[in-house]
Image (cartoon, rainbow, N blue to C red; front, side):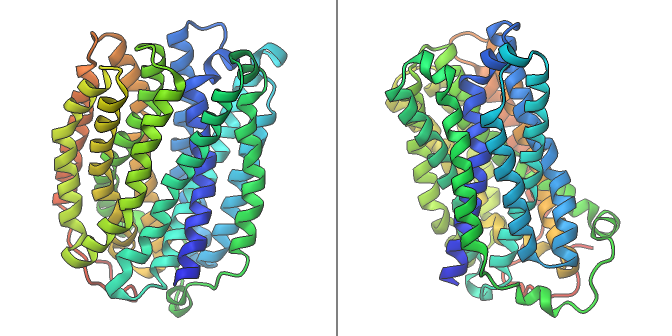
Amino acid sequence: MPRLATASLAGTAIEFYDFFVYGTAAALILGPLFFPTFSPLAGTLAAFATFGVGFVARPLGSVLFGHVGDRRGRRPVLVASLLLTGASTVAVGCLPTYGSIGVAAPLLLLVLRFLQGLGLGGEWGGAVLLTAEHAPAERRGLWSSFPQVGPAVGFVLANGVVLVLSATLTEAQFAAWGWRVPFWAAGVLAVLGLWLRSSLPESPRFLEIGDHARVPLAEVVRDHWRLVLLTAGGLAVGYAIFYAVTTWSLAYGTERLGVSRTVMLSCIMGAVVVKGALTPVTAMLGDRFGRRPLCLAGCAAAALWMLPMVALLSTGAPLPMFLGFLGALLAFVTMFGVIAAYLPELYEPRVRCTGAAVGYNLGGVLGGALTPIVATALAEHSGRVPWGVGLYLTGIAVVSLGCFALLPETRPVRLTAVRPVME
């Protein structure tokens, strides 16, 4: 289990590095480079729109790679998704800007972001299921949480590289070529990830399935549509919180508040590090007290904290901003620390890779794709404190709370069950 969990963590860290480095670049530099004819606000919105395309692609990746995972095994998904995400990320770093090839530049950027999201949509299901289906039932939450630490590691890596470049390069150097370096680094990380995953064993639960689903998506839509919608709605607030903190607030702080890029990245990274460190802790609480109670507690905490968070952000001072981000991500990790065990336990084995991944990534469309765009538009019409953004996030938290309230508890459930938890 330690070797398997470590390999899963490393793989998700690498793939989320690819995904997050784009979000950071969208907040800081992609608007002027690929949409120079737009106003600063419109350029940022356009860059966030291409950012959102990655989320739209993720459920499609879940369907594509979920079909492979339910028909051929979890292990092939890990290799194929890593190759696709890594290659498309490196290609972004090699892409000519609008000044070189005109309108073809943003169009190619859109295509590459779509491919990036497609690969990430398959990654989560394969990595989480391979770990969860190997883990003993009484510690499934703990071992399954290791892939969930990967996004925090990937975010710190992505933003750490950007932070170093920001501190060592001039604005002109960063705009000319420095922004490309984090994308090129994805190639090295992809090779490392493939090496780590080359010797992983196939899931024993998958090998036990005698009758594989012929068309997993059709079974999910027919038998589990309500479950998919409820899990997507429940997870929406987690995505909204994370990308409000890591993407929208970065653009808002640097453009509207005049806070330096280095200070904003440092505050956000500090909160993400704490979030990553606490992920296994919340997972162990899920093993002890159940998955659903922690999801409900996280949603409730988010609903109460969103208005204080935007008030603390509006100060532009490092410590209050850090505390605002930290409170939001603590609410986030209370939910997402147990999700890697919770979602697989809700679906029967023959469609688990498709069902769990589609529900997880559809939540990203609802909460992650729109949040930077909506928050940017709301903040533009707000005063010093963007209360509209806080109310928007609070509303999502209330909806997610209702969705989790309608889901059942699953702890402890054997992953060899042949019937879905919810009919």
